[in-house]
Image 1 (cartoon, rainbow, N blue to C red):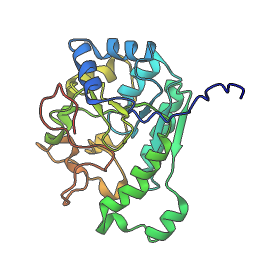
Image 2 (image 1 turned 180 degrees about the horizontal axis):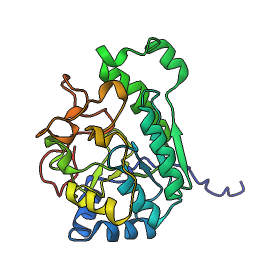
Image 3 (image 1 turned 135 degrees about the vertical axis):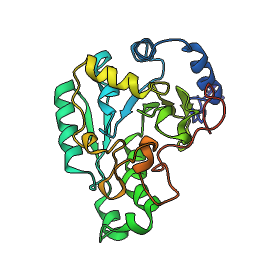
Length: 258
């Protein structure tokens, strides 16, 4: 009988993109490095694969968008257009996309059929804010991030007590395949941000002057009172501090959060 060459068996690669050890290694590698140096190395050397920047185009978003665009304006920028944003936010989004020359801006919207079935009267935010965030933010973002190995976020430790252990690199616990989450501004202060805006002549979100220091969907965003955390105006009156896209970091700020 003629010899038959062994057939190569295709195997699924089920290994995660990144592991907890990868996040620890990256945090250690860039400890002491400036934000600009870290981003230029990570993006320039493609250390974290295909990456997207997720932006709310909120109160402080222009700083991170400018940082990334100055290094590589082709990095995809994802915005969750929930259908409930302030008109000022949408205008600010368009202004920054043009001003910063963002070459791959992607507007992510919730599924129209899902909205019709689960939030036809647009009042789910008033009795089920988690469910509203799920259909308008979490699910659309999950679809939009398919194929990306890592995301860049604008979260900062000073924004709220629930973020005071925020590391630069962590694993996205919502993604079973091990997507990496990068928080370049984790250790920035409000003074750092203000100085960056001035140095680069960046436009400020028009609602900041009215006391909105963290800006999300209009129904769930209120003015921040003196002495409150910047995110105190989000979901006021509810035991809720995040929309579901991010987990609350805990423990050593040099370690990834779970």
